[in-house]
Length: 270
Image 1 (cartoon, rainbow, N blue to C red):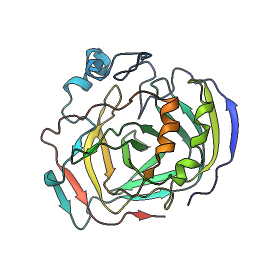
Image 2: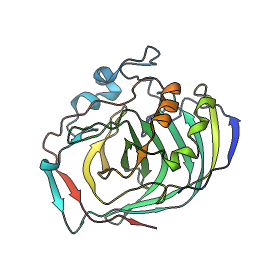
Image 3: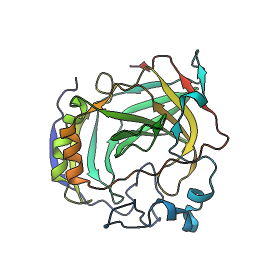
Image 4: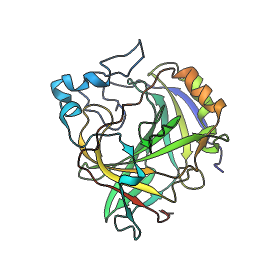
């Protein structure tokens, strides 16, 4: 179970350089999703009309995808590996200009993939889930966003199923009503993403994809947790939907000729 987080409430001005979703160029205009009358920009099928976001329309390695078990390559020895070394960190909890709930971290640890180190920068939520597993869409998906020293991105996607109240979410979820607009933030202390706060095993899929937000940059290494150990209660989703009423999930994209690897080895967590 997660230890309670200490909160320091404060209002900060989120400048235009605030990241949208995974990582957005600070000079890019806003974008939106389907069904939200307050969109600050175009919905997903129009993202590619912007010349700066052309990859959203023509890219061959776009995310999210549907992970079909029958079309994955099973890797018993886990040669592509996943090694997370997270530590408690402070962060700012807010809703960014794309209407995505985000926690920007000051530290937090790292992820290592095939000897390359990626540093945890932030995490955010999409509802419903962006990735689907064998066609199943989940009420919530958490993205842990990491960046290497040379700017490469690696994201871990964690789906949440309906079930018992999630103890990790409970440590800051009730602060959601305080986030009245993108200029309001809650400072969090000792955000701890390690197990058992988050369940990141035993199986996961790995593929090459993209940002799920404009500019839809490719060459992002995606890891999607396939287990259903993370649950969210109906009350917690009700709290979320009271503040964020509309979907912020990009539709599933074509797999094209990409390989999706699936591992059954337990993650190495410290």
